[in-house]
Image 1 (cartoon, rainbow, N blue to C red):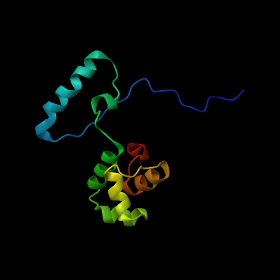
Image 2: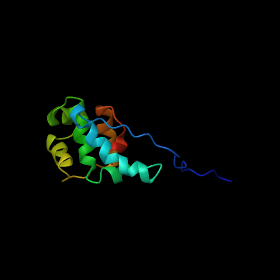
Image 3: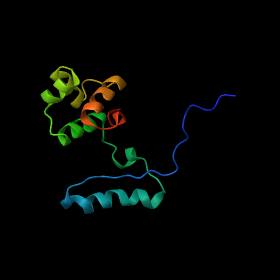
Length: 111
């Protein structure tokens, strides 16, 4: 008999968030109501406006790269990076893996 190929969901997830020092209390107030209701909360509930483009842009800025520099390292036109960051072009799995290698992040941040 074959074993299941999917891994079971984890029981607990640790959420780490980086915020500016002057906004720590605001972030804490935003998350606290969710923690009081349940033991675990989906990050999508806490950040409903987050989109994959935010993950790409944030990772690029964190690495100190311009769109042009990222495009050169990933081997794609700069306009593609711009379109992905502005939500006009989908970030496919293959492209996410390519960009993630350059940005030194998990590709799933962009999906």
